[in-house]
Length: 316
Image 1 (cartoon, one colour):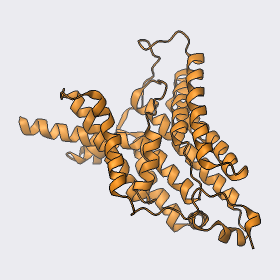
Image 2 (cartoon, rainbow, N blue to C red; image 1 turned 180 degrees about the horizontal axis):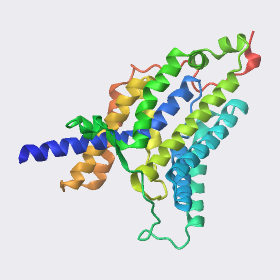
Image 3 (cartoon, rainbow, N blue to C red; image 1 turned 90 degrees about the horizontal axis):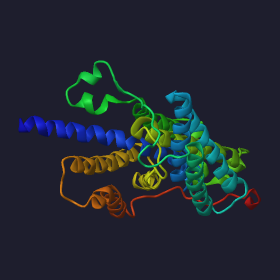
Image 4 (cartoon, rainbow, N blue to C red; image 1 turned 45 degrees about the vertical axis):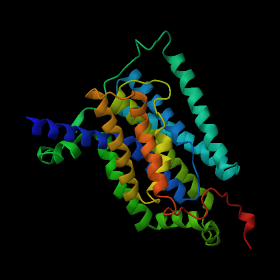
């Protein structure tokens, strides 16, 4: 009986790890593409929050989860477009731009939530039905592995599939080579007659779409409701994981799974009633992520032109 309980605990722990990693993976993969194009986007947190709200609101009003997902992606893309305009066209400081969008999203989602759902308190929050778990035929029947990897929400599968897809685009296509070249030496791309700004716009908007998609996961596949600041720092964790993963999709996946494992572990400890301050348990994933970043210091080498606006008149 004890061995059965242990096996059930481990399977639940690892299945939770994959599920928790998914929204962070969306944000981190989007940021990877953005930073490979030489733009530092700190607005992941705010974009995920906006995606979570818009996805929830549309689904609540329409009853269609996929409409909510699409709306979240559009909302994320709009914020990505705003970030691209500030950073690539106006050449505003990229750190300031990202932080400003985070503040905008935080205030705007709170205001719109109160506007859309009047007379709502913490005891009667509006809710929706979330995505069902999809068990993949045959693969889902594999002992242990099937329950962990092949009995997840559809958006979790999308996040996992995006890892090799983005890796292929970045390292096996001409467009990916151009993006990586912009992140290292934008002048070289400009001298070939290619538009640096256009490619950076595409990358930043894509990053926004991905963050919005990650935000929609929080409300449409996980919580089934929206509360202010539901993103809970996941956007910042996604940013840290890009650095931890040394700007490579496969290592970013490992970083997201690491965070997911720690978060799933603290949730399991709370579920079995471990006598520890719950605040410490909630902080555990973030503390260990910081520790991992410290241990990985000096090994990460980002794009050389990251965060530096490119001015065409600098050409000689």
